[in-house]
Length: 523
Image 1 (cartoon, helix red, strand yellow):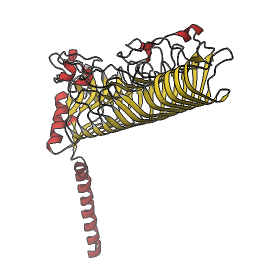
Image 2 (cartoon, rainbow, N blue to C red):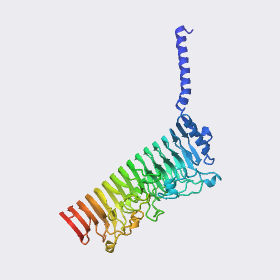
Image 3 (spheres, one colour):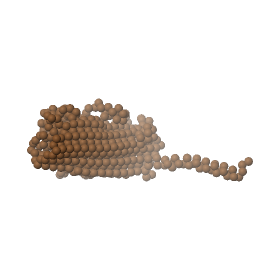
Image 4 (cartoon, rainbow, N blue to C red):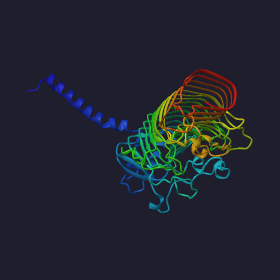
């Protein structure tokens, strides 16, 4: 017989069990109240059925409640344009693939039409890709509080790599305009069209732990402020991996500023071979006929300027090197690049260029540079037609560059006749090392520069080279200290042409040499 005390205990136990069951039933619903599973809105995820409407319905439902998570469970989701809204988080789970649909597979359907933009369409201040956002797999304009994340895959199979006004075509994986508070992280992105990620006029943005293996540009940061790009692996043999730009796409000048790029790897391996781990290098050239790309660049679009940029702890492999370019009137100042390892570099390694292409409104002055620091760099490669390049134009020198603690092992092998090459000014041309022809130095070619300091620089060649290590042309207020040129007994270490106020300290065997003015002399 059960006494009263035991009865009370049993009743309490049953009540506790019922409460636990109720809690286990309610809690998941409570936790998932702001999660909108795209399958609940009709998405099939079978790789064949077009899921555009279902995905956008989930986004709309979340937005109507003030925001939430649009969830993609495992599956393959073909889609055209996904229209983001504020306070939306797209979450691609493990095994989930968001597949950019090909218009030819779904006749009569396609991506959203590119919006009009006079600054790109008729005036052509920047190319088609930088002038439009809606013709993308994922796009948002004028939004805030956006997250795109997960351990799934965005596959841009149906995106094109070029700009086309043909309705229905899409050429970007993710495009955002005039948004703020954006996070993109943890995803894999494959063959993403012209741009994997194009934010324009976006502030407060974090991009972290992405693996991008794409057929043109990786990440283009255009007219943005407060951006962090960290822990990313980006492989782009046909175009640049990470680019900072300041175009006229918004219809006015806007500086790209307060940007940090750190702990990343960029490369120019064959398409797809970074993601599959084979790291193949059979592709020899990019579409512009130069070497495979995969680099970090500042420019080419450079109307608004670049300020307060830090790039650190980055590795390069089998790609072009750094390019810092102001050719459309931009001020480029307070730039710090440090702790960089570059292997098998296929062009100049360093390319700092001030030019006058001036693609933008009339009346804008040529740009300028100030306080650019490059330090702690190791580099191998650089084919014999190239060398590191710092170049302004007549009357507009590159200014305020500091380079320190650099070790370069270059390929070498150029003939002595190459030392006599006259490098074209190319003042109004596209800024890339390949457009300047063969270069007359194997270490550094420096022209139209003022206020330059270089310290603790070591240059070596894999094979004998007939060029001097350093050529300085129209350079003033220069200090070279603790330099090892790698020049042989028969070769020249240094050529000075129209150089003023130069000081050499511990340059090879010279403890100290000062020059007030040198018209033309080799050492």
